[in-house]
Length: 588
Length: 50
Image (tube, rainbow over all chains, first blue to last red; front, side, top):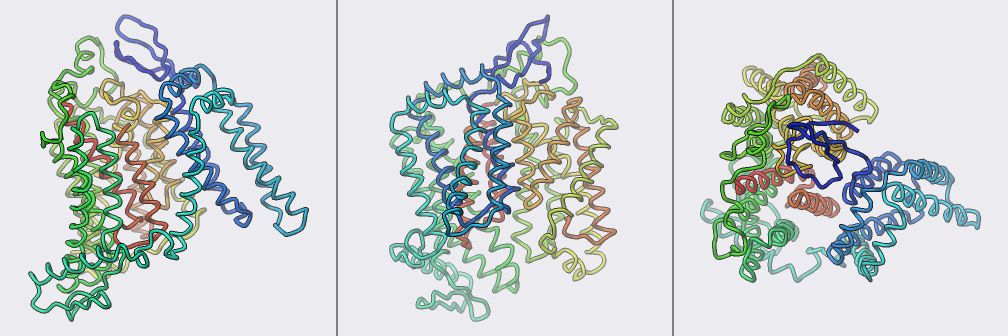
């Protein structure tokens, strides 16, 4: 529980209680103010946090994996179906849930059941009656642990009331979950029963067409093209590849189907129907064509003398680059095509307007510790907070695509981030870049946690940096290390702290995030932003999540971006020193 | 929130991709690719509101 400053007039629906003073409302956040959605998120996070560490101790041979899969799929599908069938009930029960505190006693019972579950897991399985009894107890303890955790967040009586209002939603969800479970089994076995284009001949024409397209494109660039349709081999005598059925654009097309349906569905009020439905096959077609371009480019890179790049970084990144380009193009183009636009959207809805922050700016007598990036609606504050981080991500994809095992083009990440930071420099000058002693302490703490967890979690994939640097001439080697270190210590901390602490914590609470004080947070936003930060650190996700929480604490103490950036920069500087002095390249 | 929902959906789809291990979309790059796409869409949507 904490107090935070809030500008007058801010109306929040997450259970915040306000009492007015002359110019401010002081907001008190209670656990009991969390609605159904927030509690479900907390439940899922608790489930993940508990399940991941105990996975290695749990028996795999008792069918628990399938049970868990069906349970998770059923729960997700049920909530989705139930929400759309009974939105009113969902909101009514959510408001009732807000009045109910989290029941920690159930949480304690949950821990006891979880301990019993782990205890039964330690008993070997067999085929005698005693083993069957233990298996039954094992299941019972596991289910009880889940139910008790759920009851801690949402009272059982409200859950039952909600289920009753949703009719047969639970039946549909159960059937769909079982079907999804069977489909996944077949797909993962790769036995061709479902979703295996290598055997599913209905996909063969698409593969053939991709082959033909690639062959036609290659003829534009190469004088001698090798194209054997029997073995699906294509390229030049010097470098050729086999176009497998999986390379026919199946994945990108499926992703585009999901994206376009979700986009048109979510923003349906902005589209005219049925015209907008044409966008879905159009997007899928463009992605499928881009796959042919990807294969052609891969072959040309190989023919040009860089086979390692072709089958290494380019092979791994080009699919995502193409998909992201098409998806973003889809989002931009649909904005500018009136034929697809609905005339129901109020014309002033997206017009330049006065945001709540503008109104507040004139009425608040004193500013919070850190002013919002802008109180004027003449520019895009989201862009100022996010673009440096996005530039790093985009540069990373390009630089990896141009690399084999060693990312020689890493300096591109530094240059891209530095350019964007320079572009928005006037906006950043409004932020508070001061820092205190605790940010230094936070930086050292994260460094210790990072190394500690690194030792605890064991060996990581070997890094190609050492060998890659050894292959470079001395000037190139020194330049690469200088850029890599500068990125780690300067541009990455600034970009990531702006995105995760400066932007995401508040954005998860309100679309008009600028109207909130930099010190404003909810526990859910804090947790989600830190987990997201952790997940972007790959196999070091746990250390990343802990780091995110600590940097957030440094940031929220005074609401100063400088504290978070300095803490992050110190951690990265210490890691860089460890890498360079001890040769632990896998830390990079 | 809608965009966050879409991002979660993509993580799910990308996870499925990792189960079948195919070459067109690399599941190892899914996290950064989805973050890039979600962030860029947020910027586009927020610029639209101005």
